[in-house]
Length: 292
Image (tube, rainbow, N blue to C red; front, side):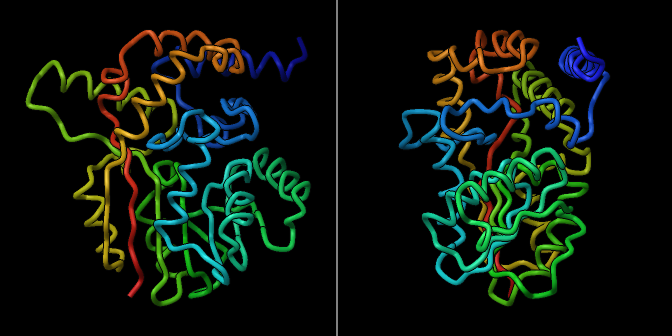
């Protein structure tokens, strides 16, 4: 086995099974690589399952939900923070017809693949994917109509810095929309509370969610308001994300075969438990806010 493959193998092993070992966000996604569960793209989101029957449909439905909530349309300049492999940007360019999409992503391996995907789609003139940080945006003041972040804002150090930067780059009347993961409110039941704690801390530890981003929906709303946003609306959509995803994967185990060999073990252990237990500590929100 080549040295880099050996390093990757043992890095994955340590990440999966060592409770005291975490990774930087870029390292997490470098390890995951192109191990998307979808069949026809490289989406890494959990999907929006209200009307979806397959994981590909759900993975497209989520960014479309975000785009529609933000009123994405012709002529808009859109800033996509944490764009993964660029599939959502291609989807938006083809379906929502914004004037321009600019993307920021800190994982170099994803940036390179995403740019190739955009070039292959013939969308280089309208989709500009950059390597850069969502908390230190190299974007001009008041130059963007819509800022979106699909399943990435929980990584940012910190999410509050992202809110401040988003407000800065948005034009007056501009919108911020996130599909984001936050903890659930603690149950009064002690056993359930332990389930919630274990569920949240497993995900937060393995996917590099900073301690500063551990807060509930009311605090999320307060932090958006403190940053300067108005007309804030936050909705939990967890029932249309976690349980149907879990049910689908439990019935379609072929998708587990696409994973890294060591990740298959973790996946099988997870799928043999109930969704209610696995995702006990995780809420999933769709958040909307405007710049005055």
